[in-house]
Length: 409
Image 1 (tube, rainbow, N blue to C red):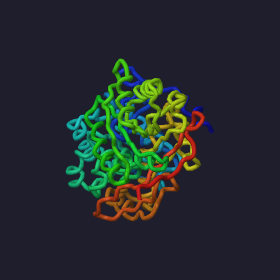
Image 2 (tube, helix red, strand yellow; image 1 turned 60 degrees about the vertical axis):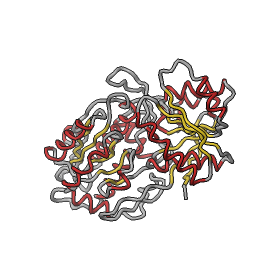
Image 3 (cartoon, rainbow, N blue to C red; image 1 turned 60 degrees about the horizontal axis):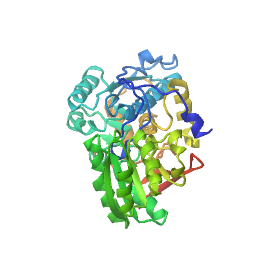
Image 4 (cartoon, rainbow, N blue to C red; image 1 turned 90 degrees about the vertical axis):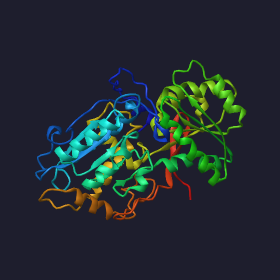
């Protein structure tokens, strides 16, 4: 199945009427997707299977699904919705249907807190699953601690995922994403690492310190950076600035629209580095850029055309055919982690947050069938170690190929 063929799906416009994506820090970068709030999409109104006769398992999902970064994050919601519908169509989790409440916090901490209280206190969710709220997820910690409700996978965009035992990461986090540019540089016999990041959001600049730190630890050299506006009239000066530093590998943390202009602009200036892009910031039109031949892409979780991605492709094709398949795998992986945690839940009775936590903390050396870049292990009451591995692909003949696991130790 060709990556280009899969990605040529119709794309939903955002509430603002644009399909351009805006990236967020290292996990950022976007294609297109729907935005806005969608409640109870997988449960009663989602058409639970008649085989799922048990009490519903109520789960929440919060993300920044509107505003500047909405199109970056909304495919993650679509993936969780597709997962919930697929689970229900197959009879639920041990007979319990999933009742999913997917909500948009628009990146507003106050709104996010209000949504969270409603989900926990009124909707009675037992977990947040596959979240995509890079601006707000860390702000939930103190409230969730009082309720004992876990956050299970999604876009692991802050250190809260590795410092708070109620947050269970299932995909590559910010640390390994920062290190991957130096890892690729070393593998390719290069040394000088440069970063281009989105100027629209302050959080984007947050990637610089970990990239610098990783370069120092891994024996490469961080030679500079540039904040890039997607609305800039011309990128020639940015390319020349990067070229003058001797940059050999460029960590591209830009919007898809900006990358599509930046890469040919730099090529025109005779600046032809190895580009390193996030999977969620790649589409067929970008892959067609001749200057990207031989460059690399990293993925939060599994690559969607891989063998282990078959279940994801089937569910998305049936329940969310408009969503680009380059996106959403991080939240799908979080949903599969939640499902694995409850695989032994009794068919009778009501599933509780305590049962979810017990199930999560029983997981040891489990890669969820190969969809995580390394096995997951969790221990009750202990922070979870950052992932040290990530999936990396190379661009060859306009396609992303040869998925490999790259590790920092």
